[in-house]
Structure formats: structure tokens, C-alpha cells
Length: 424
Image 1 (cartoon, rainbow, N blue to C red):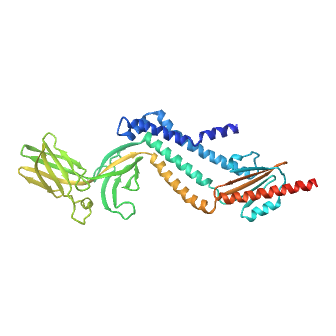
Image 2: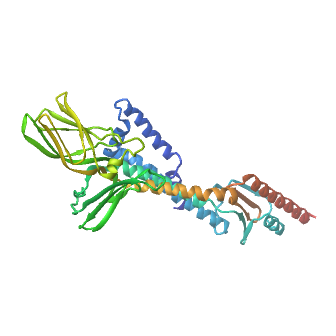
Image 3: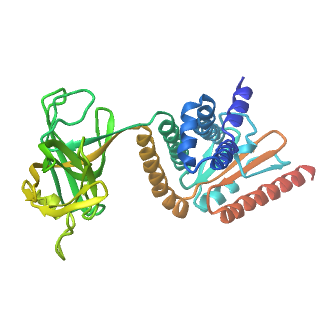
């Protein structure tokens, strides 16, 4: 049963599985590219809808999970061998295995190896020596990081959902639960951090289940109702009043404008009429922040009134002002800041973050271990008619090999001397 377990473990954790799966999806990507320009989006859509493709992609995290199990099993078996608690040959755990036709242990071997800085553990028929720190924790971190990475890709590919809403000052926070939350304030200011130049904060108050106030920023992304909150674009929500000589009843409605950064245009079509209004925000004065109008909330608007393809008039108006000319009237009695926001339900992101942390931890631990304290191990197992010598190294292999072969020469020479003494 133990042999069957080892075979299944070795096959399932084979190193060829990830390259085969990645190669399969790469060939599929090339095939899809012949039929569409949106190759990656199409491939993700195929994988999300196909149980077979999702199962193939799941082979990589499954393989990595079995690798974790295999590494743990091999580490424990190696420790048992060095402690003399198992009679298995265990040659696959070592870099070099040598059989010598002598059967005695030699105190001078222990003294020589101990003088070289190796620690020694002796049991009835096993002499184990080692120095340095094992890289087993580093290997586990790397494999766990790879597992999290591909598990995150799998979860994101098969279950990610995204919804885009307008978050507007003074309006309810857009949630499917209807928690009674209100967007109290949206502010943009210069950032004091090292990553972003500006800090955007959406302050939300709620009388619902979570109560109190909560702030949503660009970085790090916050979660709300199980979804990550990603602010995307800045803009304004305004109440537009419009009248024209051929529109005696006028028009009045709320409109949301995505007009940032300055110079970006957005337009609104007046329903039931040939009119269309193109809005933009003016460039600030030289030396001023491009987002100064959004920061202060004082919003001058440039506009072009179009009738079909003809420009009827152009002009500008300060925030919450009006413009009147030739029988046309545009007024903006109320302007509020808004943020176009994505609410993305994607738990694969958590796995991707975990993978990054695990890889970083592995690098931090591995560098000093490999440079200063590489693990080196030797084991000498005494049988009635032979000595089995084992050696492995995770760093400093040349120096360790020199110590190992010196030990072999010492055993071999001592063994020959004992045989000659018995013959005489």
C-alpha cells in the first residue's frame, strides 16, 4: 500500500504536468487567434463555459497540492532515515550513494567530521552528520505560492463577475442589498504615499447592517458586500435645464458626465429633439493641478450645442450657473462629484495576493540560507558486511563533496587495515 501511495504521489506531482497544461492553452490561444482579435477574452469565455477546459486548468493547482504532499513526505522520510528509524534504502533522497565492503564504525571518522563543523547523531547502526539549515520551508513556500497563483487564475477565470455603477455625492451607495447607505462625500487630494500621486476617498454612511461610516480608496482596494470596489473614472452629475426657440416646453433631467481629465469630452442627447450638447472641462492655468476643479468642486463647464451636425453655439458657464443667448438657455442648478466604479466579485485576487506574499517570503528566507547556511548532510549506515554512505547538499556542493570523499577514504583505508590485521 505504501508503494502504491508513493507511485500515485510521484505521478500526480510530476513536473511535466504544468508545462503540458500551459502548452495546451497556448496552442488553443493560437487557434482562437485565427478567428478573433479578442483572443484572450474569447479564450477566458470558452474556459468559463466549458467544464472540460476548466478541469484541465485545474490540473495545475492539483499538481502543486500533490507536490506539497510529496515534499512533506520526502522530508519526513529523510529525517527518519537520518534518525535511523527506517530500513529503506532511500537512495532517491541523496545526490551520491556509495557501498564499501567493510562493516565497522570508526571513532576517527566522527572526530574528523566533527572538527569540520558538522553536527553528529549516532544510533545503533547509523551515523548521521549535517550542518546548515534545510531549504525545505523555502521549497514549501514556493510550491504553495505556485498553487495559490494558479488557483487564483482558475477561480478568476471561472467565477469572476463585474458590475459598473455611478457613485454620486448625496445619492445612495449602489448596492444590490439596498442597505440604506448614502455617499456623504467624495474627495480628491494630493497623496502623501509613495505609490499614487493623488488620494481619492469616497465616504459612505449607512444605517443598515454594517452601520457607521466606511471609506473607499483607490489603493488598497476595499471590499463591500463580497465585491472589490475599484474606482475607475471621475466625473460630475448635474441637473441640466435646457430650452430652445423650437422647444417651448424645455427639457430638464439629471445627467452624468465623464469629463476627466480636462479636455476629455462627453455628450448628452436631448431626447425628442435634434439637439446634442458636448461637454468638457477647461484646462487649468499653467502650474495648476489638472484636477483642481474636481478637488475644489468649483466646476466650470465648456459646451457646444449641436443641432444635427451643425454647431449652434459654444460657450462656458461656472458651476451651478446658466447661459442664455439667442433664445437658448442652459442652466446647471446642481452639480455633484461622481466616480464611475467597478464592483468586482473575484476571490481569485485573494489567492494572487497570497501568492505574491509567499514568493516574497521565500526569496527573503532563501537568500541568507543559500549564501550563509546551506544544508549539507551525510549518512553512514553499517550493515554486517558493508557500509552504505550517503551524501546530499543544497549548497556548497564542491566543498561538501570533498569532505564526503575524505570520509570515504578514511573508512576504506581503515577497513582494509582491519582486514589485513585479521588475516595476519
